[in-house]
Length: 162
Length: 271
Ligand SMILES: Nc1nc2c(ncn2[C@@H]2O[C@H](COP(=O)(O)OP(=O)(O)OP(=O)(O)O)[C@@H](O)[C@H]2O)c(=O)[nH]1
Ligand SMILES: [Mg+2]
Image (cartoon, rainbow over all chains, first blue to last red; front, side, top):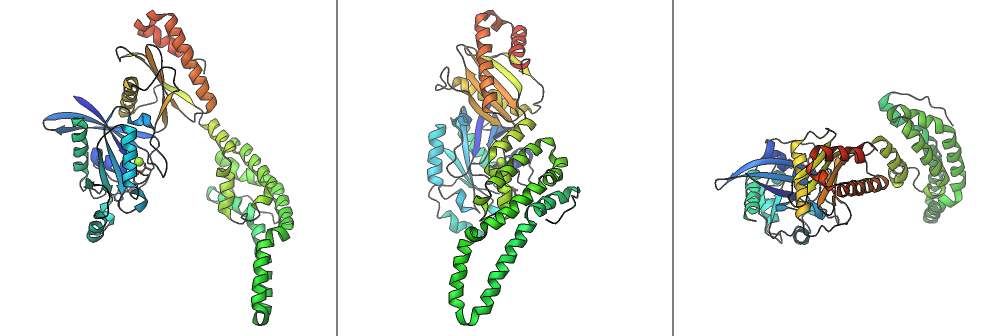
């Protein structure tokens, strides 16, 4: 079986660990236990009749001007950038942040995910969507299990194509 | 100062500390402020604007005008209650804290003039005690979470295979261990990881993985605890010694058992 290393990055508290937890264990918790360093989990996914073992690196969130150490990206086949739809500071510099991650990781495409969709009304969400400077691939909710599977499938696809 | 009985009920200790350190200051501060306000009221009708201005001046010059008096009070109070502060915290955090608290209190007393403006805020005090100066906090933490080698992996450059290892047996999470191996493998494949460069580090939750690049092997070490510059230096030296030993007797690369013994002898037993 092919193993692929994928990364989740983004500001602290946006729900990276919650997305992984939803995807791998189908669980959700309201508690916030900030990740230290990196947490590795794995899940086997099936994609175009291939079985891939995804090694998911859930990296501790960064704050302004803080970078994910380059060593974390070594050997990564794909990365997901997560932001929090309810916290502007997590997506205000979306295009710069993505550029920086591309530079650092050498990856060409990054899956961009806006999480915590459940905290916004449909109208607010529509309005917000029109303001993003960069295409956002998926709008998810780890809490309500919305689009989580799809986000990781897209990530797997990118990992496989690399 | 009013004597406070030290209540060792866990939930109370924080309150006790707060009380010990601040009650009197707060009272003193309030008393002085009341005084200003009272005078303000008295003259309010006629000279209110003038008084307001004066009060603003007084407020801004407050630290200078009254600082010395208050500083003295606080100094004495802190000096007197030093033992009680330590007593209140002692059972919770143990003997290590004592040194730390005493050092911090000494500093607090010494620098009291600097803090005269914000000493009435408990948050500021806590910040001072636990954040502002991290040296002692670090020291305490280090004694509690002393760094330890948990896993050692020796990987052949040509083959990419694990040729020797050591495990203390504390890392039970399989995904984490395979994550570490992935990291080492990626490090090995990375064109940029040149020989002799600094250790590359990756923090896996509570474990830290350090990787070093040698002539024909990579050595990676997972450690737990708080890593100090001193520990890191020692580790780096240990790794160099291990690498040297391996290169003196290259045949050891073919003998996993011997290699494992050597790893243990050089990196673990000397700890
Ligand atoms: N309402 C809502 N809350 C969420 C969602 N996803 C995560 N949360 C909450 O947001 C908080 C932070 O979630 P984490 O998954 O720990 O965030 P993180 O990005 O891993 O944070 P760091 O590890 O510090 O970088 C937690 O309290 C979660 O319960 C979501 O989809 N909706
Ligand atoms: Mg996390």
